[in-house]
Image 1 (cartoon, rainbow, N blue to C red):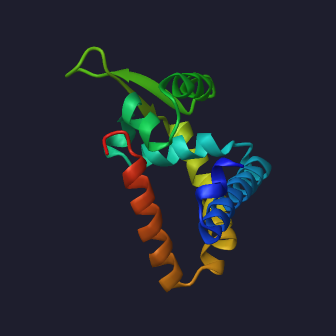
Image 2 (image 1 turned 45 degrees about the horizontal axis):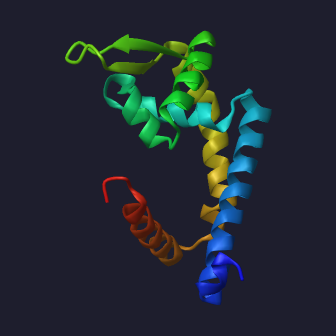
Length: 153
């Protein structure tokens, strides 16, 4: 007997479809970003998050939470991106223990080249397949699931 035996068939199918869609679409987006600009998806996620943040910078801890990566994983990712000239680390003046990751001019330029690839991929692999009513339902359901899964829930 598997642990899924207590789940009802439509819930098992929905869960498996969610996992498969997430894996396939994120893999496809990464392939497209790598082919077009040599950028892995996590790099794009960091660049986009920083560009959307005040002053193009974000506390490392908040950035890790936003892109769903461990603090140590983000540290290694930022190290690689810093060596590539895409981001810099900045000390937090209010809290000397805190550190910001900040977007560089080169990081912004790379994001400008990658964003159309990302938007085209999201459009092709999601938006074009989901009508507005379905999108509202997906957002509501996934928000409910995410709210329950958050550490502070």
